[in-house]
Amino acid sequence: MTTKQRFEQALRCFVETLQAQISDDSGRWSIKGFIDIYRNIYTISADTKIVSKVLEIHIFPLLLQFAEQNGYRIVLPEHQNYYPDISFVSVHDETIRFAVDFKTTYRNPQKPYLCNGFTLGSHGAYFTDRNSTKNIQFPYSSYTGHYCLGIIYDRTSARDIDETKIYPLEALQSIASVIGNFQFFVAEKWKIASDRGGSGNTANIGSINNIQDIINGSGMFSRLGESWFDDYWINYRKIQIRQPDGSYKLICNLYDFVIYRQGDPDLIVMKNNRER
Image (tube, rainbow, N blue to C red; front, side, top):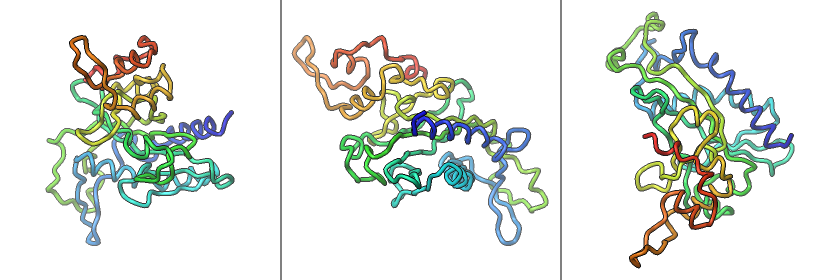
């Protein structure tokens, strides 16, 4: 077994323990709110950015234990927007590094087999120049693997959450959790990538949004391979192809790109990116 395979296996075993660590017997989040020195509890907003950050804080001490038990130290990014969220660096060999990003998202209540999707990092400077240190903790090429540690959850109905209410500490058990029904996954980011950008005009790679395909690592590039993922996103919207009428069109989908590179389009897992 390679170092990469051992790390991934250990990380998968770790996420299997998280359900019991962060939720109660009914699958509801064990975090209920914030407490002040007067023993007042303020409920957590259902805002996805707040939920995501608190989940990271909740899990971080467990990740520290995981790193120590498996011979790694954790290096956090020097700046807020640097990639990745966590760098795992071997205590025995500094050249062995793994990039791990937290990814949290919620199920679509109308189509529970889909989630809201998420971004998989930039396809900008540090991705195209693998030796760059711009907006990244260590050069991209120095990481042995790039992983997502993900949490998919259900959001509690807004009618069951009162963000304006202050609870006494004695009422802790009666406070509704804003999220629950967790599902955890570990995946190399190229295996769950789509061929679309992840967030408006920013240079972010988008994910697929079929939950089972995320769990299985069956993204659009999963049958093509990581080299196709790298090639596509390094050249995303940079290549023009000539049309029959003499005009030119930017390549911005995987099918056109594979045809352009003379690859096999039958290897594209198309359904993952077409279920929105």
